[in-house]
Length: 189
Image (cartoon, rainbow, N blue to C red; front, side, top):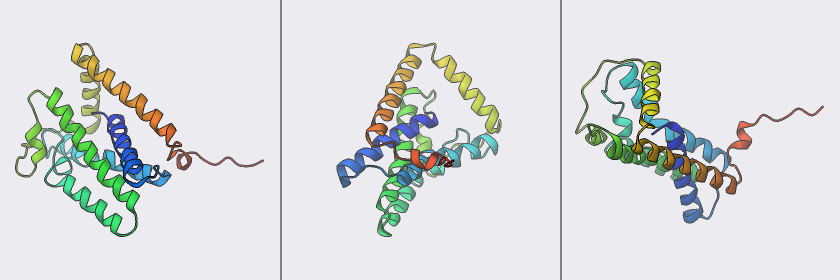
């Protein structure tokens, strides 16, 4: 799953949790925390694999159902206990949605299946040559382009496009949280 897909899945889950569980909409700062949390597993594991060759497929401790997800949930609960409930939800939901999204993607599209890699450290992938972050990202972009030529790839693209459109609509419905922090205030003349 690409970064925007992780952000979209995380945002939908986060907004739903806040709306249904707490009766609130996401705040500006909560959405920024969520955005980081939805990318964190890849920001940790991908460099370990692609730049340093410590993993073979970019799935390790941060993606682990036994380590990464419990650590994120524990951090979320800690933040909640300190009065930062929305930030705690953002960390736990963002991280967990990333891993669950990758699990679903791996179950549907990975050949050979990489599902056991999500059980690190019980199952670990052997180290592999590191192509470098840039080279591996470029390779994945080219692979994605080739994937779109088949029926499976087109279905994946359609699902992701619908997810992104629905997420943007929900984000507007929520009042575009986070947007105000990203925009620079205009100087009055």
